[in-house]
Image (cartoon, rainbow, N blue to C red; front, side, top):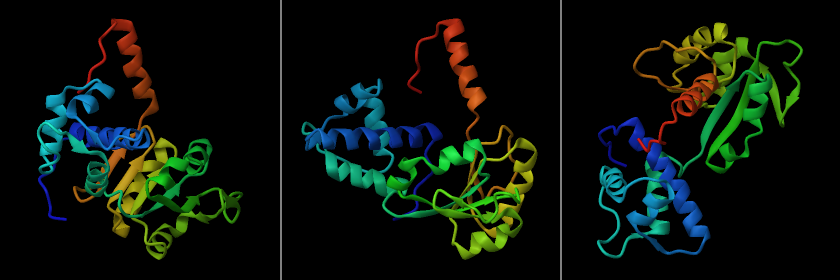
Length: 215
């Protein structure tokens, strides 16, 4: 598909939200859906829905709404969910084990093909149907398994060094669960999930009795 101007992170996030809403709407048997209905289900405004979708092209017909299946498939293509991505998981502690068991990854096309760790007691063992590989063989393993994305589920003091090693292999995407900001060049895409910060956000909302935001 043609290269598009990069939208904001908020727009990309909402696109994922619309995709899940459309999955639900389709299961409910609807063939068309309005921007008003999409907005209502996620506490957004119809104008926001239309603006987000218009960034990627023209969808639907004024007065008739959006064809549910067609829009879902187009959003899937925009998000890259119409193909399979090979994923490597580094770190098979408590967090890594939970992520390896998360079935939604597989359903959405994210195939955990490789797991690695530095614990000699774990290396060579079977973990969720995969043999745990030695992280010291990171470059060889990522290239052999044609990995597209890496998930880091390692302690903070190990994350930066591993991110630099991943970067050298040519992999362009990292999902980081370590509580640290990673420094890499501009060619690699990084998303960090910090559980403590998310809880702090909720704590702020409860403490200050704020109204939920849709932004």
